[in-house]
Amino acid sequence: MSAPVSSEASLEQKLQQLEDQLKAGTPDIDQFRQAYVALRELSRRLQSLLQWAGEDRRGKEDEKKFQGLYRQVAGWNASELMETLKRTGFALKKDSGLKDVFDRQGYRILELVRAGKRDEAFHAILRIFVSAKREFPTQLVEAFKPVYSDELFKVFLFSFLSGILGQEEIE
Image 1: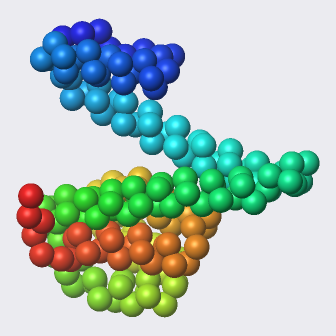
Image 2: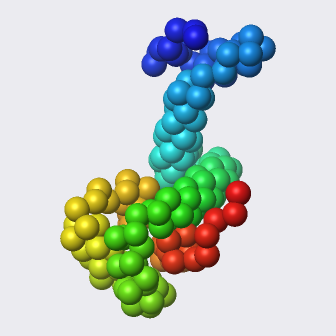
């Protein structure tokens, strides 16, 4: 097994190390996960910087170009979050205690989300996790952030709920 990837290494260096592991026939899943986390963090940071650049009035001539690139990166990040929320829902379905409560309260939560009542939906879902003494998923916290439009919020929550309320995932 090779040495762990240092946090100072660039993403390109991390990817080269992963490629070298594959060539040697010794891939390390933890290092692949670390690279994925670094890539996601880089993408979120890029989105934030693009938003700032698009709003900066000093570079007005490039404002539309920055906003276009921002929408591309934000769309990719939203797509990733949507898929992560769906997988989180499927994973939580295995916890019979949580699954039973979501089965009983699911339609009420779906209606709260459909109506755009973020705070009430958050409270209902948080109450389920607190009463079950389970940790509230960080991906779900991300979905409730006010930076996302009401439409994206609904898509995020419907993705999560489809995972926990829907049929078993087929791999």
